[in-house]
Amino acid sequence: MTACKEWEAAISDRVMGEVEGSEQEAFSRHVETCAGCSAELAAQMAFQASLVLPAKPLPGELNAWPKVARELAPTPRRSRSMSFGMAGFLAAAMLVLGVGLGGLMVTNSPVDGPRLVETSVSEEDRYLTFLEEAAPLLLAVTNREVPELVSASFLGSEALAAEQRAAERLADVARGLIDQLEDTGRDREAQLVGELELVFIQVANLSRKQDAGSLQILKAAIDNRGLLFQLTLEELRHLPEPQDGGV
Amino acid sequence: MANSDEQVLLSRAKNGDRLALKALVERHQEDVFYLALGLLGQRSEAEDAMQEVMIKAIKALPRFRGDSGFATWLYRITHNTCLDHIRRQRWSKVTDSMDENPGLAEHWQTPDPTDDPGRVTASAELGRELMQAMDTLTPAERSVFVLRQFQELSTRETAEVLSRAEGSVKNLLFRAMRKLREAMAEFDDSSGHREASL
Image (cartoon, rainbow over all chains, first blue to last red; front, side):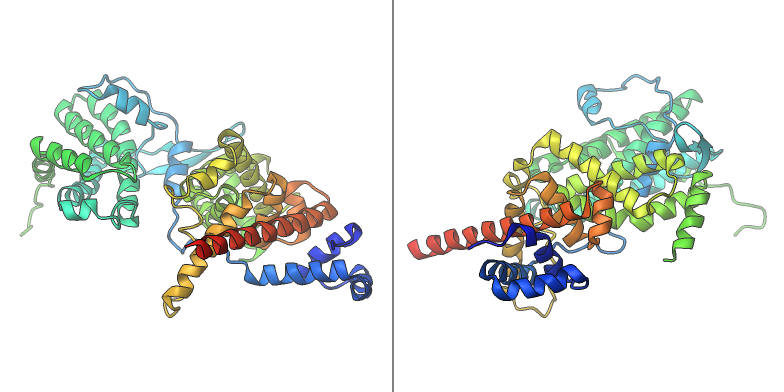
């Protein structure tokens, strides 16, 4: 026994709690005498009551803005060549080139909508901010022990996902920064940022089915290149000079 | 949040105010994500769609005249963006890959910590079944179901997002609910048969 075609919309309204209006009054009279509509209404009401919907995202769980800001920023010029291998891997992983998150503002373009443009945040500030943000992520990767890496709870976990998002963002920042550093002849700094960029791209691209092997290789690469040591050294080199009267 | 507050934000955003743009994105990102999750079924795809929608919306902001509400306009962009994703990837892949990709099944209604574990598991199972059942819907039925049930939009708002008549929205919801109910009853029958044969 099926519901009457002409009353389907009324059943839908009733199930969704819309019970006002003359049509609903007419439907109430109809349903008293129509077994098909009565059965369908009861079945849909029961189904509605049993529906289990997905949880809404928690406050702070999503953060679309950094990527949106980067996408809207003007694309920086790319001139450098790859300093070492994995060009194919990088090409595949390369997203839209971005500038650092720090110091973005917006101007209005009548054609393309509001666009973000770079402000005058200095290259030095960008470099130091990058190092500051890179250090904890590198530490997080190198400090992981094998049992944790292979555990099902870690692979695909929010902790790893958060690290991957941070790595993706830092890789984007690195690309803009390398061009700036090379343009001003700071090749040593550009090389360090380039190596960190590769590490971050690899972290960002770890698949959920990643076995411990790739992470182990990554840890070894960070170790072999002395990246943490270089990074700490750079931070020390760029510490501000003590001011007069400083302790 | 008051509508006038949103108007002020929109006006500032159209003039290129970075903070206003950021505030608009942050205010609407959860709703956009949740709608995309319902339409696409996978969290990672929904996040990508959310980013894409926000970028499209900001670029198109100067053309937003306010004929509909900003949220309605954003939902329309989300819906069209998700349909593009679906056209590229086909509906069937959504549930085929659920075991490998945390989508709706992982994101199912957060259980109360005091719930007993058996009930929580049953809830997650129901979620998976509904997700699979949603795969039997046509794109139009699925869109109406998600907008009405997930986003809790009214018939009028749903009609506005989808550019359909209200009567059409009601009929599509009726069909969607009936199909889902029948599909889930079949799952119950087949799982009952499986259990019986063990």
